[in-house]
Image (tube, rainbow, N blue to C red; front, side, top):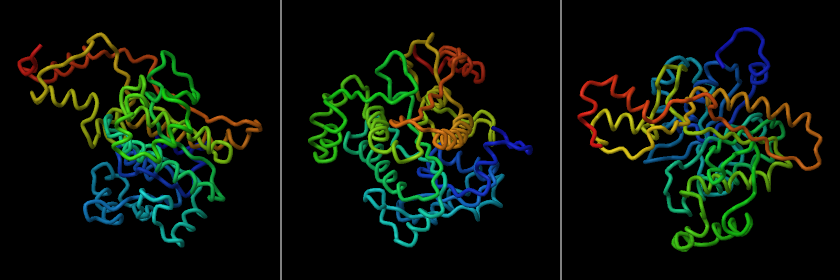
Length: 344
Protein backbone atom coordinates (compact mmCIF):
# COMPACT_ATOMS: atom_id res chain seq x y z
CA UNK A 1 0.00 0.00 0.00
CA UNK A 2 1.90 3.02 -1.25
CA UNK A 3 0.92 6.63 -0.51
CA UNK A 4 -1.56 7.24 -3.31
CA UNK A 5 -2.90 10.82 -3.49
CA UNK A 6 -6.30 9.84 -4.88
CA UNK A 7 -9.27 8.83 -2.74
CA UNK A 8 -8.80 5.49 -1.06
CA UNK A 9 -11.16 3.84 1.44
CA UNK A 10 -8.32 2.66 3.65
CA UNK A 11 -6.61 6.05 3.71
CA UNK A 12 -9.94 7.77 4.34
CA UNK A 13 -10.63 5.46 7.27
CA UNK A 14 -7.45 6.54 9.06
CA UNK A 15 -7.67 10.25 8.28
CA UNK A 16 -7.97 12.21 11.51
CA UNK A 17 -7.86 9.04 13.62
CA UNK A 18 -6.09 8.51 16.94
CA UNK A 19 -4.14 5.26 17.05
CA UNK A 20 -2.68 3.21 19.88
CA UNK A 21 0.32 0.97 19.12
CA UNK A 22 1.38 -1.68 21.62
CA UNK A 23 4.83 -3.05 20.85
CA UNK A 24 5.88 0.02 18.90
CA UNK A 25 9.57 -0.38 19.80
CA UNK A 26 9.78 -3.84 18.21
CA UNK A 27 10.67 -4.86 14.66
CA UNK A 28 7.14 -4.80 13.21
CA UNK A 29 5.93 -2.02 15.51
CA UNK A 30 8.62 0.43 14.41
CA UNK A 31 7.90 -0.13 10.74
CA UNK A 32 4.17 0.21 11.40
CA UNK A 33 4.71 3.53 13.19
CA UNK A 34 6.82 4.85 10.33
CA UNK A 35 4.21 3.90 7.75
CA UNK A 36 1.41 5.48 9.77
CA UNK A 37 3.31 8.76 10.02
CA UNK A 38 4.42 8.75 6.39
CA UNK A 39 1.22 7.72 4.61
CA UNK A 40 -1.77 8.22 6.91
CA UNK A 41 -3.13 11.59 7.93
CA UNK A 42 -3.73 10.56 11.50
CA UNK A 43 -4.38 12.96 14.33
CA UNK A 44 -2.27 11.26 16.97
CA UNK A 45 -0.38 8.08 17.82
CA UNK A 46 0.00 6.80 21.37
CA UNK A 47 2.82 4.34 22.07
CA UNK A 48 2.76 2.22 25.19
CA UNK A 49 6.42 1.99 26.27
CA UNK A 50 7.92 0.54 29.43
CA UNK A 51 11.00 2.01 31.09
CA UNK A 52 14.16 0.04 30.35
CA UNK A 53 17.74 0.18 31.61
CA UNK A 54 17.00 3.39 33.49
CA UNK A 55 15.47 5.13 30.47
CA UNK A 56 11.90 6.42 30.71
CA UNK A 57 9.33 6.09 27.93
CA UNK A 58 9.91 9.62 26.62
CA UNK A 59 13.67 9.04 26.36
CA UNK A 60 13.15 5.70 24.61
CA UNK A 61 10.82 7.34 22.10
CA UNK A 62 13.43 10.01 21.38
CA UNK A 63 16.06 7.33 20.82
CA UNK A 64 13.66 5.33 18.65
CA UNK A 65 13.04 8.28 16.33
CA UNK A 66 16.80 8.65 15.71
CA UNK A 67 16.75 5.44 13.66
CA UNK A 68 17.28 6.01 9.93
CA UNK A 69 13.95 4.25 9.44
CA UNK A 70 12.27 7.54 10.40
CA UNK A 71 14.32 9.82 8.15
CA UNK A 72 11.28 10.69 6.02
CA UNK A 73 8.93 11.50 8.90
CA UNK A 74 10.92 13.76 11.22
CA UNK A 75 8.33 16.50 10.79
CA UNK A 76 5.59 14.17 12.07
CA UNK A 77 7.14 13.33 15.43
CA UNK A 78 4.90 15.82 17.23
CA UNK A 79 1.98 13.47 16.55
CA UNK A 80 3.54 10.70 18.66
CA UNK A 81 3.13 10.54 22.44
CA UNK A 82 4.90 8.00 24.63
CA UNK A 83 2.83 6.58 27.47
CA UNK A 84 4.95 4.92 30.14
CA UNK A 85 3.49 1.65 31.35
CA UNK A 86 4.21 -1.30 33.60
CA UNK A 87 3.09 -4.33 31.63
CA UNK A 88 3.32 -6.57 34.69
CA UNK A 89 0.21 -5.11 36.33
CA UNK A 90 -3.33 -5.21 34.98
CA UNK A 91 -3.93 -1.47 34.71
CA UNK A 92 -0.36 -0.93 33.41
CA UNK A 93 0.32 1.43 36.33
CA UNK A 94 -1.22 4.33 34.43
CA UNK A 95 -2.26 7.60 36.00
CA UNK A 96 -6.06 7.86 35.92
CA UNK A 97 -6.02 11.06 33.86
CA UNK A 98 -3.72 9.56 31.21
CA UNK A 99 -5.66 6.30 31.14
CA UNK A 100 -8.98 8.11 30.67
CA UNK A 101 -7.54 10.34 27.93
CA UNK A 102 -6.25 7.39 25.94
CA UNK A 103 -9.54 5.55 26.42
CA UNK A 104 -11.56 8.52 25.22
CA UNK A 105 -9.46 9.35 22.16
CA UNK A 106 -8.24 6.07 20.67
CA UNK A 107 -10.14 4.64 17.70
CA UNK A 108 -7.77 1.97 16.36
CA UNK A 109 -5.43 -0.35 18.28
CA UNK A 110 -2.49 -2.24 16.78
CA UNK A 111 -1.10 -4.93 19.05
CA UNK A 112 2.39 -6.01 17.96
CA UNK A 113 3.95 -6.91 21.28
CA UNK A 114 5.47 -10.40 21.60
CA UNK A 115 8.41 -12.28 22.99
CA UNK A 116 9.65 -14.04 19.86
CA UNK A 117 12.41 -16.02 21.53
CA UNK A 118 11.29 -19.57 20.92
CA UNK A 119 12.42 -21.22 24.13
CA UNK A 120 11.64 -18.78 26.88
CA UNK A 121 10.57 -20.42 30.14
CA UNK A 122 6.88 -21.17 29.79
CA UNK A 123 5.73 -18.82 32.56
CA UNK A 124 7.68 -15.90 31.04
CA UNK A 125 6.36 -16.56 27.53
CA UNK A 126 2.82 -16.80 28.91
CA UNK A 127 3.15 -13.49 30.76
CA UNK A 128 4.30 -11.61 27.64
CA UNK A 129 2.36 -13.36 24.89
CA UNK A 130 -0.93 -13.95 26.69
CA UNK A 131 -1.34 -12.07 29.94
CA UNK A 132 -0.33 -8.61 28.71
CA UNK A 133 -2.71 -8.98 25.79
CA UNK A 134 -5.48 -9.92 28.18
CA UNK A 135 -4.83 -6.82 30.30
CA UNK A 136 -4.86 -4.64 27.18
CA UNK A 137 -8.10 -6.06 25.79
CA UNK A 138 -9.88 -5.68 29.12
CA UNK A 139 -8.85 -2.03 29.07
CA UNK A 140 -10.08 -1.64 25.48
CA UNK A 141 -13.59 -2.55 26.59
CA UNK A 142 -13.78 0.97 27.99
CA UNK A 143 -12.84 2.70 24.70
CA UNK A 144 -16.11 4.38 23.57
CA UNK A 145 -14.87 5.28 20.07
CA UNK A 146 -13.05 2.05 19.26
CA UNK A 147 -13.42 0.92 15.63
CA UNK A 148 -10.93 -1.93 15.32
CA UNK A 149 -8.12 -3.88 16.98
CA UNK A 150 -5.53 -5.82 15.00
CA UNK A 151 -3.78 -8.46 17.09
CA UNK A 152 -0.57 -9.68 15.43
CA UNK A 153 -0.05 -13.38 16.02
CA UNK A 154 1.85 -15.89 13.89
CA UNK A 155 0.95 -18.36 11.16
CA UNK A 156 2.76 -20.97 13.22
CA UNK A 157 0.22 -20.79 16.02
CA UNK A 158 -1.31 -23.67 14.06
CA UNK A 159 1.98 -25.41 13.25
CA UNK A 160 0.68 -28.79 14.44
CA UNK A 161 -1.83 -28.91 11.57
CA UNK A 162 -1.23 -29.94 7.95
CA UNK A 163 -3.75 -27.37 6.71
CA UNK A 164 -4.22 -24.00 8.42
CA UNK A 165 -7.63 -22.39 8.05
CA UNK A 166 -8.46 -18.75 8.67
CA UNK A 167 -10.14 -19.42 11.97
CA UNK A 168 -9.20 -19.93 15.61
CA UNK A 169 -9.36 -23.60 16.58
CA UNK A 170 -9.82 -24.05 20.30
CA UNK A 171 -7.91 -27.30 20.72
CA UNK A 172 -4.93 -27.28 23.09
CA UNK A 173 -2.65 -30.25 23.80
CA UNK A 174 -3.36 -30.52 27.53
CA UNK A 175 -6.95 -30.41 28.74
CA UNK A 176 -8.87 -27.30 27.72
CA UNK A 177 -8.27 -23.58 27.53
CA UNK A 178 -9.58 -22.75 31.00
CA UNK A 179 -7.43 -25.40 32.63
CA UNK A 180 -4.29 -24.21 30.81
CA UNK A 181 -4.96 -20.59 31.76
CA UNK A 182 -5.58 -21.50 35.40
CA UNK A 183 -2.38 -23.53 35.68
CA UNK A 184 -0.19 -20.96 33.94
CA UNK A 185 -1.66 -18.16 36.04
CA UNK A 186 -1.39 -19.84 39.44
CA UNK A 187 1.65 -22.12 39.21
CA UNK A 188 5.18 -20.86 39.80
CA UNK A 189 7.77 -20.66 37.04
CA UNK A 190 9.49 -23.82 38.27
CA UNK A 191 6.20 -25.72 38.45
CA UNK A 192 5.33 -24.64 34.90
CA UNK A 193 8.67 -25.92 33.65
CA UNK A 194 8.04 -29.33 35.20
CA UNK A 195 4.81 -29.80 33.25
CA UNK A 196 5.94 -27.94 30.10
CA UNK A 197 6.35 -31.06 27.96
CA UNK A 198 2.80 -32.19 28.73
CA UNK A 199 1.34 -28.73 28.18
CA UNK A 200 3.06 -28.13 24.85
CA UNK A 201 2.27 -31.52 23.35
CA UNK A 202 3.27 -31.37 19.66
CA UNK A 203 4.08 -27.66 19.81
CA UNK A 204 7.84 -27.24 19.24
CA UNK A 205 8.40 -24.29 21.57
CA UNK A 206 6.80 -21.97 24.11
CA UNK A 207 6.43 -19.15 21.56
CA UNK A 208 4.04 -20.97 19.21
CA UNK A 209 2.11 -22.50 22.10
CA UNK A 210 1.51 -19.22 23.92
CA UNK A 211 0.50 -17.42 20.71
CA UNK A 212 -2.01 -20.22 20.11
CA UNK A 213 -3.33 -19.73 23.66
CA UNK A 214 -3.64 -15.97 23.07
CA UNK A 215 -5.77 -16.56 19.97
CA UNK A 216 -8.12 -18.83 21.92
CA UNK A 217 -8.30 -16.18 24.66
CA UNK A 218 -9.46 -13.62 22.10
CA UNK A 219 -12.08 -16.01 20.71
CA UNK A 220 -13.36 -17.07 24.13
CA UNK A 221 -13.31 -13.81 26.03
CA UNK A 222 -13.26 -10.77 23.76
CA UNK A 223 -14.75 -11.29 20.30
CA UNK A 224 -18.31 -10.66 21.49
CA UNK A 225 -17.67 -7.14 22.72
CA UNK A 226 -14.61 -5.93 20.80
CA UNK A 227 -14.03 -5.26 17.05
CA UNK A 228 -10.95 -7.46 16.88
CA UNK A 229 -9.15 -9.57 14.30
CA UNK A 230 -6.04 -11.76 14.31
CA UNK A 231 -3.29 -11.23 11.76
CA UNK A 232 -1.01 -14.23 11.19
CA UNK A 233 2.15 -13.57 9.16
CA UNK A 234 4.65 -16.29 8.49
CA UNK A 235 8.30 -15.47 9.24
CA UNK A 236 8.85 -11.73 8.74
CA UNK A 237 11.90 -10.79 6.69
CA UNK A 238 13.58 -7.39 6.14
CA UNK A 239 11.65 -4.84 4.06
CA UNK A 240 11.33 -5.25 0.31
CA UNK A 241 10.80 -1.60 -0.69
CA UNK A 242 9.43 0.65 2.04
CA UNK A 243 10.68 2.93 3.39
CA UNK A 244 14.03 1.63 2.18
CA UNK A 245 15.00 -1.76 0.69
CA UNK A 246 16.39 -4.31 3.11
CA UNK A 247 15.79 -2.41 6.34
CA UNK A 248 15.94 -4.48 9.53
CA UNK A 249 16.90 -3.92 13.14
CA UNK A 250 17.82 -7.51 13.93
CA UNK A 251 19.26 -10.70 12.54
CA UNK A 252 16.59 -13.28 13.22
CA UNK A 253 15.46 -16.07 10.94
CA UNK A 254 16.75 -16.18 7.39
CA UNK A 255 18.59 -12.84 7.80
CA UNK A 256 20.61 -14.38 10.64
CA UNK A 257 21.50 -17.43 8.57
CA UNK A 258 22.62 -15.34 5.59
CA UNK A 259 24.62 -12.87 7.69
CA UNK A 260 26.29 -15.54 9.79
CA UNK A 261 27.16 -17.62 6.72
CA UNK A 262 28.62 -14.66 4.84
CA UNK A 263 30.68 -13.64 7.89
CA UNK A 264 31.94 -17.19 8.34
CA UNK A 265 30.45 -17.47 11.84
CA UNK A 266 27.97 -20.17 10.85
CA UNK A 267 29.92 -22.94 9.16
CA UNK A 268 27.41 -25.78 9.28
CA UNK A 269 23.88 -25.68 7.89
CA UNK A 270 21.38 -28.45 8.69
CA UNK A 271 18.54 -27.97 6.24
CA UNK A 272 16.47 -29.46 3.45
CA UNK A 273 17.86 -27.39 0.60
CA UNK A 274 14.80 -28.15 -1.55
CA UNK A 275 12.34 -26.83 1.01
CA UNK A 276 10.80 -23.45 0.15
CA UNK A 277 11.07 -20.79 2.82
CA UNK A 278 7.91 -18.89 3.68
CA UNK A 279 8.76 -15.28 4.43
CA UNK A 280 6.73 -12.08 4.42
CA UNK A 281 8.66 -8.83 3.76
CA UNK A 282 8.26 -6.37 6.61
CA UNK A 283 6.61 -3.68 4.48
CA UNK A 284 4.06 -6.21 3.15
CA UNK A 285 3.31 -7.15 6.74
CA UNK A 286 2.73 -3.52 7.74
CA UNK A 287 0.43 -2.91 4.78
CA UNK A 288 -1.60 -6.00 5.66
CA UNK A 289 -2.01 -4.83 9.26
CA UNK A 290 -3.30 -1.43 8.12
CA UNK A 291 -5.73 -2.91 5.61
CA UNK A 292 -6.81 -5.39 8.28
CA UNK A 293 -7.67 -2.55 10.64
CA UNK A 294 -9.98 -1.07 8.02
CA UNK A 295 -11.52 -4.45 7.12
CA UNK A 296 -12.25 -5.34 10.75
CA UNK A 297 -14.17 -2.10 11.23
CA UNK A 298 -16.25 -2.80 8.13
CA UNK A 299 -17.01 -6.37 9.16
CA UNK A 300 -17.99 -5.34 12.68
CA UNK A 301 -20.39 -2.67 11.49
CA UNK A 302 -22.15 -5.08 9.10
CA UNK A 303 -22.04 -8.20 11.28
CA UNK A 304 -25.34 -9.39 12.75
CA UNK A 305 -24.29 -12.88 13.83
CA UNK A 306 -25.49 -14.01 17.24
CA UNK A 307 -22.24 -15.96 17.77
CA UNK A 308 -19.41 -13.81 16.38
CA UNK A 309 -16.07 -15.37 15.49
CA UNK A 310 -12.65 -13.80 15.25
CA UNK A 311 -11.66 -12.57 11.81
CA UNK A 312 -8.34 -14.22 10.96
CA UNK A 313 -5.91 -13.21 8.22
CA UNK A 314 -3.27 -15.79 7.24
CA UNK A 315 -0.40 -14.09 5.41
CA UNK A 316 1.67 -16.62 3.48
CA UNK A 317 2.91 -16.81 -0.08
CA UNK A 318 1.37 -19.14 -2.65
CA UNK A 319 3.88 -18.24 -5.34
CA UNK A 320 7.19 -18.12 -3.47
CA UNK A 321 9.36 -20.94 -4.78
CA UNK A 322 12.64 -19.74 -3.31
CA UNK A 323 14.22 -22.70 -1.51
CA UNK A 324 16.88 -22.68 1.18
CA UNK A 325 19.24 -23.97 -1.47
CA UNK A 326 18.45 -20.90 -3.58
CA UNK A 327 19.21 -18.65 -0.60
CA UNK A 328 22.63 -20.26 -0.15
CA UNK A 329 23.33 -19.97 -3.87
CA UNK A 330 22.30 -16.30 -4.03
CA UNK A 331 24.49 -15.59 -1.00
CA UNK A 332 27.43 -17.31 -2.66
CA UNK A 333 26.96 -15.34 -5.87
CA UNK A 334 27.03 -12.08 -3.93
CA UNK A 335 30.18 -12.80 -1.90
CA UNK A 336 33.56 -14.11 -3.11
CA UNK A 337 35.05 -17.15 -1.35
CA UNK A 338 31.65 -17.84 0.26
CA UNK A 339 31.96 -21.60 0.04
CA UNK A 340 35.27 -21.59 1.85
CA UNK A 341 33.51 -20.38 4.97
CA UNK A 342 31.12 -23.32 5.15
CA UNK A 343 31.72 -26.94 6.15
CA UNK A 344 29.32 -29.50 4.68
